[in-house]
Length: 63
Image (cartoon, rainbow, N blue to C red; front, side, top):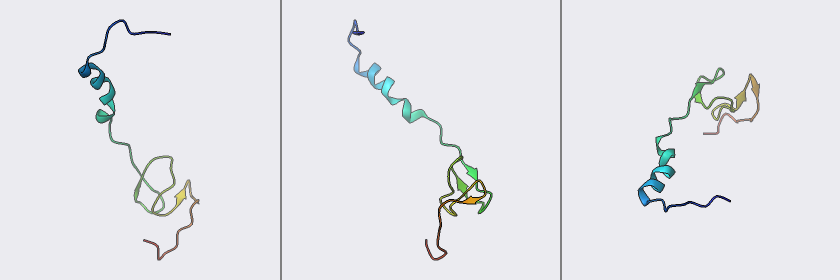
């Protein structure tokens, strides 16, 4: 098992752990059914459709 030869400074360790802050914003696409924005390859949270089929049933009075 690998063992570090030298101690890693606080700044170097924190720099290594902080890459998640610089990640790009997730892509979004338009739902072809209701034309709201949604994450790609996922069920639309507004209408419940995916790939032309209703996956999650939504009632009309639900907000």
